[in-house]
Length: 203
Image 1: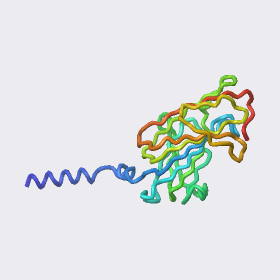
Image 2: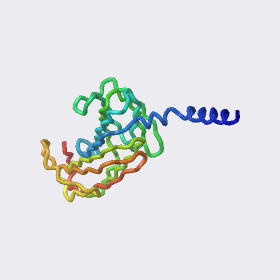
Image 3: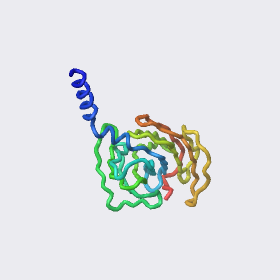
Image 4: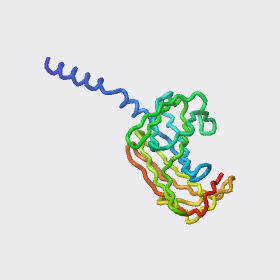
């Protein structure tokens, strides 16, 4: 009788775990590609996140993205592919959590695009510097970074191991870095710096 009672207690405890835990386990990121466009159309850092959820993620699902608390959210779009995302009728909420602003998105499709302006781009005379942090509740199988060299910029440097991605159709130079897998809860950081003798925006 005692063994039966203990079994029922253990079963009840397991069933009583918060549903959010199982929900997080069901969400996995196939890829994250983040583009950084410093001083593009504003004297800030435009950050463009292109996220693809894994095919095993059950949709629709509530998906959270952390961005710096003092940044300005620009666009949230969802779709079946990165080419077909739309910002129409996207349900989202925002809540501050310490240094972060948590954007909670109702993902009806596996492709998510989130853009924001980060005020963390520092200016000291001609010198520019920027530090980036990524933290997520979900693991990403692959994380890639694309860096845009601003108009009139010199001595463009990053702490990432990057490679020349050539001059794109906009006439600007780009650099690419393939970071690889980033586990859930692990903070990814890197630094960027360059010199720019003018305040002319790339756009």
